[in-house]
Length: 412
Image (cartoon, rainbow, N blue to C red; front, side, top):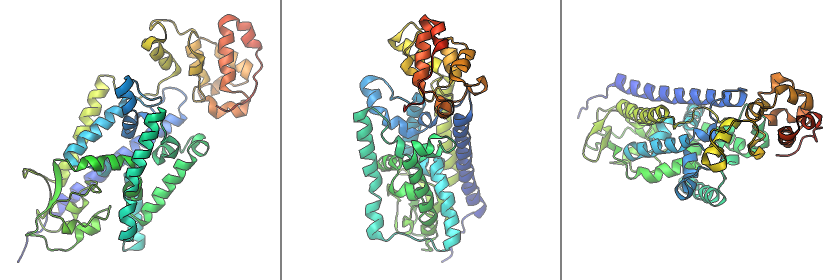
């Protein structure tokens, strides 16, 4: 019996489109992370504002009190909404079509395939129970975050570590996360999508939802030639060739199996009612959903693309009852808002203290006032607590502020 060959050009376009989308997302978010760590002023938002898992972490606080956890922005909740919307239609397409950490793993997995020729796989007795670890990670860290009202997973998160690679904090504060990141990359070189399969809490969340998704990969048994090309292509090691419908929560909807199938319409993305989409159309639909959600939120001003300055934090505190929203920024604010991540330039702007005062008292040249204090405090022998004291003194006695002697670096 002869079968019609799958259109190779169309399949190549679908595969290329997915990789282009993943590459654009990775490059964009990497540049944002780099600029967030290096720009003195006008820096873009940090990782906590641009990761959908942050929306899940702050969900309990948002529902019970109407407030977001510290560091988490509304944009993370918006991204979570877009991710869940996609999951209800196209399963774990965020993992296979958008996620930059997933793409990094996939690139190293591709290199591994070239080196090992035949892809190594964990034995079933170890692989099967290991895949449940990500659900344990999800439950543990969500429980700790919701009970402590703090981002419990942050020091252990490989993506947070990645976004801090150019920061002095990466080893001091995110050493464990950096270790997990290295393990994810090295593991993926040997076993494709290592972190996705065994440890990712976001993947666990989407895996649970994906069982209710509308579109799934389906196989036409009548035309299947049992070539196993789909099994070889699958980055999460699913046996697609034995499934009529790919129901596994492990499927990341990358559609690589569809693109690898040599027989036309044998593997396809379709709904329960028979509506079919090409792999290229599925990728386009996922991107469209994210673009519409993020674009709408940006247009309404709800999506945070820029990191909040000290002045922003003061105004937010005033708007929520901490003072008058139209009060001038003259230092009448809670000095506890001054943190290690705050720059002297921000303090000058918010408190109305001349930059020259900080230069004389702390010895920090104005050219470095835009650098976060945590990155220069050791060099100049002061701490954020010294800066808080100077601000408090300046309110009542500028001369006393000018005469202040820093106590030296302290732990924050």
